[in-house]
Length: 121
Image (cartoon, rainbow, N blue to C red; front, side):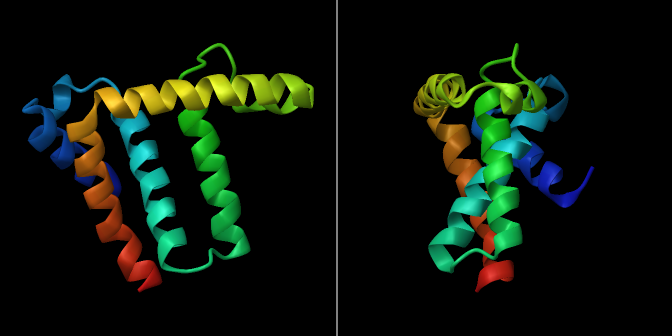
């Protein structure tokens, strides 16, 4: 378990009162925290091209989590109009997830800020 996964496990334990082993979506939550880290890094400074590419790919992974029948490779092969439709649907699903998991989101954002500052401050 790397430091970000450990941080997610700690955030989940605090936010949900659940043990790490009971949380089925730890990989997803780690990806969400990395998305929040990207947001914080972008707030602090202009992202490098590498960080920008990494952050965009990560956010796509977050959104596609809500469309399990489409993976990144399948998404890339779709026509632009279909990608747009899926992207909007996935973003709406992520926004709804955030609204219904406010405690977890708050803890993940806090942890992401701790990771972002050493890189960008």
